[in-house]
Length: 520
Image 1 (cartoon, rainbow, N blue to C red):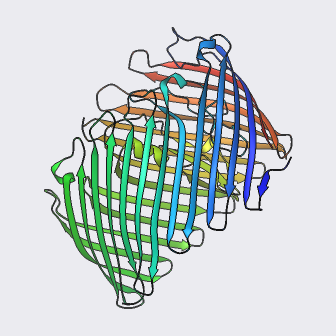
Image 2: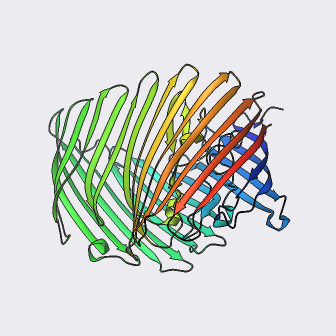
Image 3: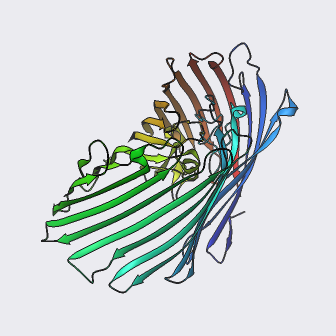
């Protein structure tokens, strides 16, 4: 039966996944406490898409039922949702953005969760869910809580002739963590912005103001204000003069004097001799106690049509801040390297899908995104997912993430390798957390409909409160067969292991799974 369509705009695709899993340690506990079990998984799901016109919708919902052979009291149902919508309610004037998400997340302080590798379970498990998002992580699910979030953002946006384009937006966010030590959070965000037109050319400018207020159910409330003004005066085809001013005000538990009220302003120059190179450099002054004067800027390089590099450096209320985006592709390979940092919290990270980078193959090029739902025309490559596996926390923290990936395709084989380094510095307790890892996979297409995937990886978790940290590694093999365009199945084997200096945190698991995916 073909996917349902309405007025040739809406595409609705129902599906179901059936699997049987055997694990000798599904709770991911120490060997002395491990109990094996057979687990039946039934996951119906539905995806809804609409592109074009004044309404766009991309939504994927799945409901996973887990049935335990040895202990029926553990049988439960878990929900998963990834949705985004856009509507233009009044043409060229009034718009609405909306997002919604439900998934399982590690509880605060929890350190054991499904690695999600090679089809046995976990977000992005190989073969999980035809055309949809990630499966529920079966192993270690007792250490997770179901977290849901939604965001609705109505806004006015209007072009005022050649003067400017203005925008006024309000956003309501709600993050609900059931059975969790982490607070629920309700956030209201306000944004005003304006970008100049060509009325005053060669002078161009932009201005913005953002404010957010967060009410937490079980911890201190927080708020922040950010304002920025930028101007550019074009002197010639190659040179421009620059000016900027910015303001940050933060109010959260553990905020320091510099973070509470930070101001900066600067002047600079821009040089763009060709489409292959451009650079902006600023000399700035700020009210920081240390390093009040600093140089910031960005450089963009496009040495070839297949290579792009952009690097930036500035200073924020929490200190030096950097950005990096590098991509390169050849006929047989793709390369990427990215770095970003920010002042954030678990609720914001969850709503923005931070913590895991999902890999998708789009026309032979590997694209990473924050959503497990592949973009239109792409398919998931779960063996390359970068799963930072960070637990929830009520604290505000600085997050610094460096990630890289490379793929190489030759005839019937595709080799993929990804790596990441994530640092979190918690502002209230002063604790530091560092996680880093390496994940790789080899896909061998033995026939047009059959693929063998060998995947594995290692990762390390380190904490400032003492100890040597935790070491994790995983290895798995999956055989996937596409019976037709709507039906696929796989058989997967996996071993994962954790070594920890904390009592009761070390574990080993061996698992095997058979899965059938059908879409309608």
